[in-house]
Length: 614
Ligand SMILES: [Zn+2]
Ligand SMILES: [Zn+2]
Image (cartoon, rainbow, N blue to C red; front, side, top):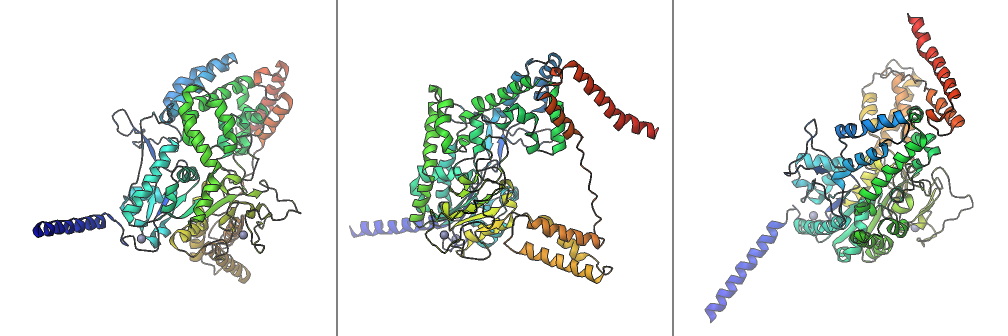
């Protein structure tokens, strides 16, 4: 008996040693999970995960240059587009009626987005591969590191915390939202196991905010796995651009705006005006019909089954949109999943509050005072960062619209801040941060464009400090990171102008000019090395140093090109006289007049100069 017991004991010991050995070997970090820095998981924004198109054998589809084909935002096959659309376009021009133009446009959209289509269960039907990194950056290949650091330049964080404390979660921006949420939950468990840390930090960026909403709602136990959440421009309540798209409430479907103003919001005015003039080669109603058909196809046949896109629509839109788009019994599963997320959106603030009550530190970094892309009719409903309206990213802050300020008699509302000594009104009087859910841990960047957020080195260094240290508890912790800061991307000043100035020979400058040169250089260096700025400061610093470099003869002054306003005048004149009508619809006599006008212009700009030359 004794012998048996001792054998069992021995075996138990062997096994326990083995288990300990096995789990110790599984931990991949140098710290073994015993350091002060929790591993960080980046949950990136829309289009920041590589998704590749595959052929029927599962091999990568390659383009003409031998490069893999990215599915985001679509795959435009120029050969197919020409083949499908050329004849209908010519016929439409010839007959001045919709001779297959709408149908061709719809087919082109279906073909281009085919790879991103989802079925009635919300699952991708395209042959695709999401590029995943189920290991820390330390284990990533050089190529993978490049992808990650290019999306979010967190090299400084990796240097402080170690690359084995940095992870990059990827997902399909046009895929199944619930799957992405569940994968993030599993990813967090994997990171805990691999690093030996009991808790992780997560960094939901932009669309990643919608994944985080789902995570907290569907997996509330994950709250115990989290140490800090650092939101960066999170789409916590979608973007009205996506809501308006699903509602087909779009600016360019208004013909007056289409022919006078819409394109100017997207491109250079002269180019925009030229397109407005050219667009008149077909009647306005034909063009509008084609655009409406394109939007119908995009929404009814492509977007409707992409639950990740639904998760980017604001909650206020959901009841009406679900009724319009998901009433059919075939959409029952899409409706079930999107309704789940609708509740996650409604509970977003409550779930974040629960996180905080459980001791998780939650920070938020947002941009403001950049108008939304003028695509949805709600574009000027709220302040914004160009892509997401401020109410969504800021957890409900009250603000003035872009270009405006809060009323002069406006008093800080203190909805969520009880400390009377705190001033949460932005210096430009646009934002009352006391009205957002997290007044004391939300950082605002004035004039910062959403898409260039990762190029703002202050935002990156703030995120690094939040993730790698415990130095910052709130917006009052450090004068280096105040609540209100500004937009910038100082790479040109840092990498080009300052090195050029340091090498410049200034011996020929007058004493006053030399002093100005030194002052401009010193100011630029202080600027790039600092972490506080205001919107527009970068342009001032750049102009001053540039001027000094020109004076020193390092650069030559750039000649300003006189902008041409020919098409602007023509387009506005056409609009005034003929509204949105196509050329064919203009009365014959005035067409004659235009022809004469054109001839005069031709004469003035081409024949006469030619004559002079010849
Ligand atoms: Zn560690
Ligand atoms: Zn406060």
